[in-house]
Image (cartoon, rainbow, N blue to C red; front, top):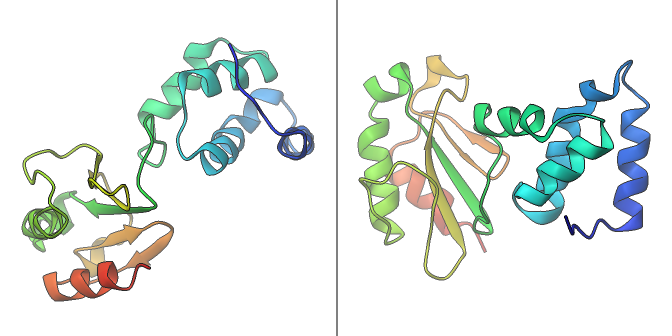
Length: 161
């Protein structure tokens, strides 16, 4: 296992762990920290976290595969998540996903994480983004957008430098 964690990040992680009564309770925070640093959660990251928290790798892997905010492969500079849960589906998220994919030259039939050829954008059709009353919703990186039309999606994408 060779994962190069900068000393500053490792110090921050050590400090994070102290905020929890049991080491394993810091799992999610460590996943977020490593994903923020590396852009995704690699197999090596999972193993490193497991060792750091005295867990088995499967205990960390199950979190990565359960929660949609964790990526297991590199993504573009801008990650566009289109909600596909019932309220958003009824609000047109299927058409919205197809539109965004078409605009970025991606396969609209692929609902997993896809990245544009230039590496600038990734698009993913995800489970609930927790704003059912304002469907359809998307997230562009950590910015939440409600009531998104195709035109509004174009504006959001065009504003990404």
